[in-house]
Structures are given as C-alpha cells and as structure tokens.
Amino acid sequence: MSQTEVQVPTQPADAAPTARPSPGRAAGPRLHALDALRVVAALAVLAFHFTGVDAASKANWGVNPKELFPWLFPVTSYGSYGVQLFFLISGFVICLSAWDRTPGQFVRARFLRLFPAYWFSAVVAFAVWRALPDGSRTGPSISESLTNLTMLQVPLGAQHLVGAYWTLWAELTFYLLFLLVIWKGLDYRRVSVFCWLWLLTSVLIQQKGNQVPVLGIFAQPLNTALFVGGIAMYLIYRFGPDLKLWGLLAASWLVMQSDLVEHADGLRHDRGMDRQPYVALALVTVFYVLVLAVALHRLDRIRWTGFATLGALVYPLYLLHEELGWALIRNLYGPLGAWPALLLTTAVIVLAAWLLHRLVERPSQRWLRARLEQEAQRAAQRDRAEGTAA
Image (cartoon, rainbow, N blue to C red; front, side, top):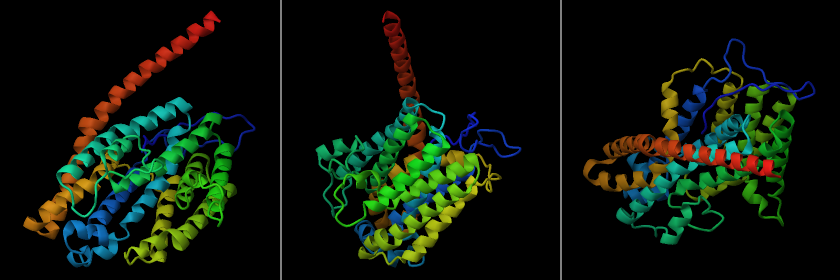
C-alpha cells in the first residue's frame, strides 16, 4: 500500500462537503493503525497457507495439518479472510493516495509500488518450482512463467507462479477503474457516484443469463463490495460522516454479506475446510468496524513507528511466503518436526521479506522513479517546444 498521508484541498463553495482535518492534528499524519491492520492481514494469510488448508498443506506436510496443529487449525483455517481485510484497506488507501495526484502520478506510483518486488518474487517462485518441486502438481511452463511477469496471467489464462497472485489481478482491475475517476478529477460526488455504480454493476452481473461476462472482470462479486467499503470509509475520514456515506457503507456491507454467505464461501466448503459462513461474516464485519474506527479517528492514538516498518514488509512477505514457505516446510518437517519447522519457516520468510524490501524493492524504486521523472521532464520540455513552434 501507498504512503498513508492526507492533504486537505481547497474546494469551491458549491462543492460537496469540504475536507476537514481532525482538531489538534496536523494534516498528513501516517495512519499507523492501518499499517498494524495490514500486518495482521498478512500474518493471517501466512498462517492459513501453512497450517489452515487441508488439501494443499497435506501435500507439503505429508499429513493433514488438522492432525499436526489440532488447536490451531480451527483458527487459522479462517486466515484466508485476511485477503478481505486487505481489500478494505486497499479501497481506503488507494483513494487516499490518489486524491491530489494527476493520472500520470497515480500510474507511476502504483507501478513502482507493485512491480519491482513482484518481478523479483516471480523469479524466486520460478526457481523454487524448478529446484524444489512438491511432486503433486505440474509447475507453470516457461511461457506461463514469462506471462506472470505482466501480472495479466488471469485474462491470458496462464497458471499462477504463486497461488496468492490472484489477488494482484483484483487490485489491478480496481486501479484501472479508479484511474477513470482520477482522470475526471476526484471529488466527493464523483467518487460517491462511482462507488454506487460499481457496486450496482457487481450485483447485476450475478443475474442468471448475464450476456456481458467481461463486466465480471471489473466488477467482481465480493471484492467490489469490499473495495467500495474501503472507499466509503476514506470519504468518511476525509469529509466526515454524513447520511449518504453511511448509506453507501451499509450497502457495501449488505452486498458483501450476500456474496460471502450465499456464494463465495460455498466453494470453500466444497474443499473440505469446515468453515462456518456466519463465523466468516462476523470476522469480516469486525474488519469493517476496525477500518471504520480508523476513519472516525478512534485509533489515532496508535502511533508506534514500528508499525510503519513492519507495514513496509507486508507486500514482500505476501509475495514470497507461499511457494517458498511450502518448499521450506517440505524440507524441514522431516528432520525438525512440525512446530520447529513452522517457526523456522516463518522466521526465514520474514527475513527474506526484509531483504527483498531493503536490497531489491527500495533501490529499484529509487532508480526507476528517477528515470521516470527524467523522462517526464523531457516529455514536458518537448511538449513546450512543440507548442512554441506551433
């Protein structure tokens, strides 16, 4: 996620509610509570993949994790819902980070945030597939592996190098749609109307006999409601709560609960995970409440700067943990046993995420940012020269 800072704009008198910083609080603080929530979401997903999945984990542990972690499995089997927390936070933070940026600035920021670490993790995943295969699945082909570098493997029908990469396509479609709003200029009304239209589209495409399947790519059930919920809570954070925003947030939750209980979670039960849909709904509802607490400034007292440091490791951790972690588990479980293998694997993954952030992500972002800014300056100079000539 992007730097969580807010700048308060000046709006014309006839604009919708004006932004208002909290009393006694400087404009532009880092929201450490959101960093803390991102860390919780990442650790939940990691715990789910390592100890909370029946089928996939059995191929790596050699035994069902229910037997290895009998008291832990019922908890971590719900860890996949950390993804829903990620999507709520993403709706909040992407709206926040894009507010006073041009479309070009937004695209550059998202590119720098997503791709350098992603490319490196894809190379690592490819190496793991080749060097430490799990023996139960056929790895992606060379062509599919190269396709993964585009982050477009879903529409191109290629196998993911890492299963967790599916969420990146959901994020990417969100950015592409939101870019259209940025192009027109972000304000209270435009963003609100966008949210209502996007949420309604995600509902309509679920009708039987839908003749426009492409809409399902950009208005994904469940995911759309979560992104919209995050955006609504950002608008509450920026402009203060009002009846229209409460209505938007309520609509987001109502659509989410329908998608979660009636549709999405049924697939999980088919996979034998033994999860109760209303427990999952309660958990995601807690996520709504926590992000709403941030929006209402109830968590402003959380100011430990360590959360910012840990938050910076979340994306590298998410990218690396699955295939690399399973490869470590397959090789450590036999000689060490279940708990030592789990703890050592987690420690190695956290260290790998830190190394990726410090040695790859930050240097490559600095290098690419400098080059992109130089090219933007040259393009501006070229445009001025052409305008003068004309």
